[in-house]
Image 1: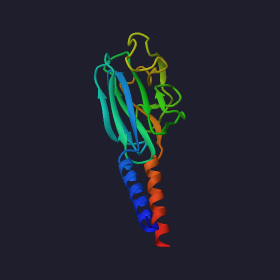
Image 2: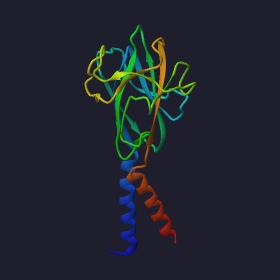
Image 3: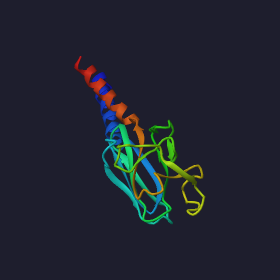
Length: 192
């Protein structure tokens, strides 16, 4: 096999791998519920809601959903939650794959007072650390299926009826994205 044929074959294989992998960089999986309703979205701006991918309106149930990231970068998990009468809480357990990480440096994030901020004004406006109303399993909410016992029931102040939570996830390029760089290198070498 000549060097030219071998070169074209190698570059074609790199391009095929890159094309297949570039459609999806990482997937976020979420399990969540709120007393009483919530909408979870992904945004590239900490002050905007973004694309809603999970909603729920029954605090007695755990809702699940996934979001496929198609590009690397920093994203914001935005949760708008509503309370229709005390008590109030939001609880969630999230994971992300393919080497992507939450602000805590891990591929798993639960509701807590460190990695989430909350506001009563809007996303990214006058935020504060949320208050904790106990870990998963406490009354009146009880144990939520698919949510770890290390997740906290969080909210703003008990009198807040509409709240806005934000957490951060950093989506890291997959090997497919790195293969695109290899393809560019192949093209550069070929021109020489």
